[in-house]
Length: 76
Image (cartoon, rainbow, N blue to C red; front, side, top):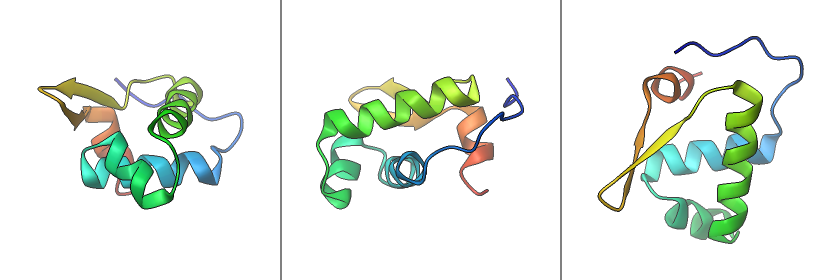
């Protein structure tokens, strides 16, 4: 699945949450690192997924796994 063209840029908070969650493999660890609640990280990432039009994470055995779209988005 490809990322759709953006009509607006994602927020920096959402991008920070994405980067921390992608690197750590956990919303909870990302939240701790960013001094946010797990719920706040989850909401930021849900908004980013809505903006991009794709799922970024899958939950696999209590872990987050990047989707193909997220893996291509992460380095950017």
